[in-house]
Image 1 (cartoon, rainbow, N blue to C red):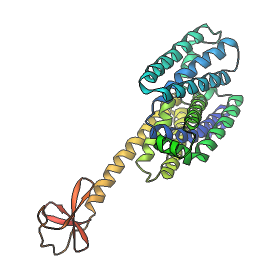
Image 2: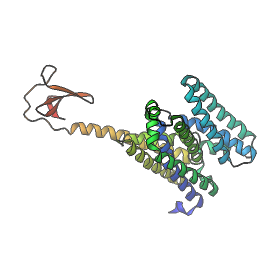
Image 3: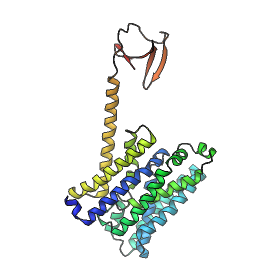
Amino acid sequence: MEILEFGFMQRALLAALLIGLTAPAVGIYLVQRRLALIGDGMGHVALTGVGLGLLTGQQPVWVALAVTVAGAVAIELMRARGRTSSDVALAVLFYGGIAGGVVLLAKAPSGTPASVTAYLFGSITSTTPNDLAVFAVLAVVVLVTAVGLSRVLYTVGGDEEYARASGLPVLGMNILLAIMVAVTVVVSMRVVGLLLVSALMIVPVATAQRLGRSFVGTLGAAMVIGVLVSVGGVVTSFYADTPSGGTIVLLAIGFFLVATIGSMVWAAAFRRSHSEAEDHLHRHGPTCGHEVVTHEDHVDYLHDGHRHAVHGAHYDEH
């Protein structure tokens, strides 16, 4: 394939594969805790780290990682103290993060508008072999942690009071998740950009929720979808000459729309597939004396071991 003849595209595809696996594996816990937008805020904080790295002549990836992890821990500690005050503190931290990044990048010798755009919206073709090696190590650590501790993280995310009563380290797990989000944001910034990274953590999970029937099934489907849209987005951007970050996110949204429409059509077809009750001469109603069973958006009646539901002028077997 022509695309594999270029070294920068080989690195881009490998980086996309890592991000496609890692981002949804972390994002599923954010969706569970209704913290879908925290990845977006962490991207703002990471921009300050990038600016600081370029200004001081250090590796932007490592400086961004240190600043973002520190910000993630601070956010989680503030969130644990109280929702009302932490909301304001979070907003100040996020706005300060992007403002600090813009100012530091403007003062950095290599902080050109082009470099700012590359970090904000992604520039996967500029990924160096050193960047790829760092991303691979970080991605593997995050992936192993997210999957290996899935049972504990799921329990803490579902009911903190129950988890605390069970002796689980709730604050420690929340801080660990915040650190994983920070690392994922830094790993993803070359691929989709700091302003779009949250989409890759959330949209594949939202799509998988339309398909999965369990947490494990949803997690697996989200990771598969993440890989498909990440690698597919990079390939599409190569041939269509479009930015990789925006292309990946649009592809992810396309998957979400297809899954949503497909699940609606499936649900409608399933409802039509019920067989009609045979020789049903009895008329069901509030006074018929048969047990009433609430089923989704309608009512079934338990009749001679069968559940009957009114569909127009007849009854269906449910």
